[in-house]
Length: 339
Length: 296
Picture 1 (cartoon, rainbow over the protein chains, first blue to last red):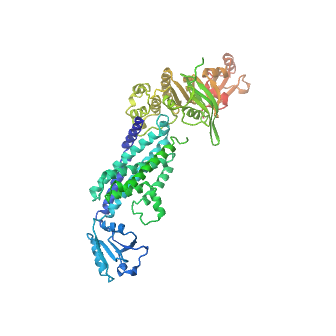
Picture 2: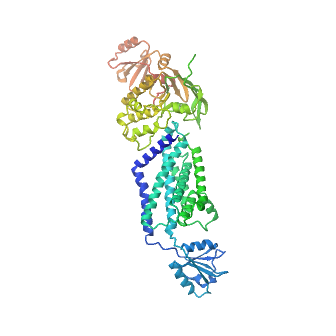
Picture 3: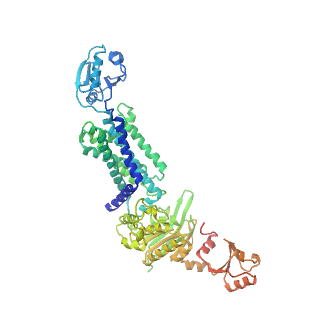
């Protein structure tokens, strides 16, 4: 069994490495990604400028304090004080205000924007508020975005890299020829997963390293844990691609199916923006997508420095998804077009 | 005691929506023989063979290997050369052979296979750069890698030039000498006549004749064909005492008494300069049985 698995793995790796156009494109995309992001964020590493108001309602009562009518400041309400304070400590929120009860405002003592906002608050002429300071280093948007970009790149590489190969093999009859040997579906599929996993993880590591050269990447947690999350995520997404293409023999259909899986992950898994505060139904859908768990775990490791205990749930979901998708892929797999 | 057939096909049926590809076919194949399935495109021979190979499931009927249904041992003991097969891109001939060699538990000596299939000069060549004949030799080699007891060859010479086809026949004859059982589908009657010990002729999913090529010809024909270019046959067809058929630029006269026919041709002042005398072939048999040409 191992002999057959290794034979298919070796052949697939040779095919990928010798296909110069495919190989160069696979390397070029991450490089372009690194350069593009570095260019966009080279000089724009300032934290976002936001003031959050602790309020159980979603609408801000601007008459409650004259400061709330200041132009060019984004005011929005939050319900959970601890979460909001954590964001102040990371410089994701520049100021937090409570206008009921203790009537307090919080700023990060190290934040220049917090300092300016404090001066604006005191000069606004409203009733005085109690000051509370929070400390912590800033989290830039790029720090939050980077795991999303890496995850999205990995997701598309996994979906299309393995999905199209299997469909091509099925369409041109190579799978039919393999089916005439003692090779089992699970051996063939495992080899495809392993091959794409090596390619994807190599690419992700290169991009991560490349971004580290151009940008100051925030990494507060364990590299090993992050690599494990990336590997589990890649396995589950590759397996998902194998399920989607388990019976398909048309590249056009495969493209549609893989995009059908890829785009929701790109939009709902939190690549570009947090799904926090969005529609609950969409959030529930997001939890069904493997990339969501990859990004939640990756950000927890990279930004918050969390360890195994915090990401265990995400890891277990990824393991379960990987196992289920691999099982379905093997059961539904068809060797030939018309069987 | 009668020897158990190595393959026994019983009441095989394969239906697709609106089409009956194989319609109640039964036959047996003795070990060590070359068995041919003949028929035009769409006759059902490839479907029949793919059911025998275990690649396609039958709608009804069964195929027994050494008296038992297919199992994993069967997959280890057969070699298959499909009608069309794609190979993995960017691999050389040697790498392709090694890939398939590793997929089997029991294997033949790779160097011997390379020698038998005359692939020595091609080992470092990319699969995609092989000619039609070279590619068929590689596909044959892949089918032999597990030292199969039964070798299935599905139209192995279709699309090859005459020289490559004859070279391929020589390879198959060498394999026949090793007493392997060969199941061959073809629509080349010459190929079947040269290679096969037993044949069945199929049309519309049914067997319309079976036996050895010589038996079938003897059973259906006791005549010889005289063939002349149509422009040389100057006699009125309706007044000639034998049946005359025209087609493909020549006339054919089917007769038992060659001397009498030649005498008649001379009496009608027909030149015998370009006269050809040939025995009946399997092509003629197919035409006789179905009323149509074998090849479209």
